[in-house]
Image (tube, rainbow, N blue to C red; front, side, top):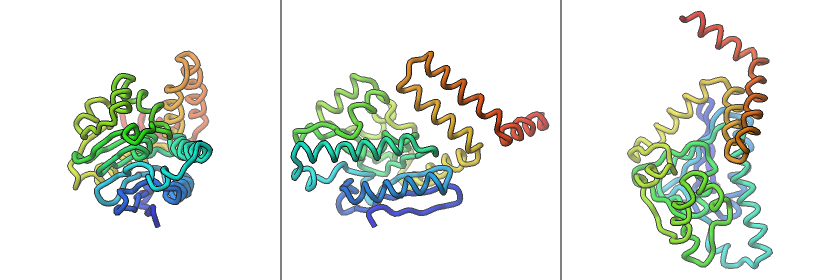
Length: 247
């Protein structure tokens, strides 16, 4: 198995498992990951994605890339883009527990997740320019949204790697922890989210995602429409009643 999947309570954990290839995202790995995220959406409340060995994921498999002609490249790029967009749009939150190298497609995968927690030893980059290409599975679109256009251009056009501290400084990751604490912290955040109202979490994620691609007034209308749905929820009514009773 190129991707391992375990469930702990309401939390799913997908582990990229090609350590000898630095968890490169070849076609088989992408297919397995797609199956797992579809399964997780039905089974758990939060999904954590991490890597085995010293990499989170070190990008696409160069052995596959070198064989592609333009038509094959289009199809491969579409498949990668569709997978990462599916992860971004899952009805459950996805946490990237970035244990090591997150390069190329690996960084694109991390950016498709909702929350990114990094080991202090993690490294980040979009080094595709070094082999004559550029990010083709969302990197040129998600990176500027997270870190700003200038920093995104610097990373993409130079192909340079950055460390965890710099990634945190520019807003690419939300937290840095020591390597041995990475999974515990990811699980802690996942458990906190899993303990909240599932429908509120689902709709909050939808509203937040929409803000990245929607003009403000349209986004505000969308927020109102989703907000109103919650008042048909018995869970919301119960939680509000419990809050009042505790005062």
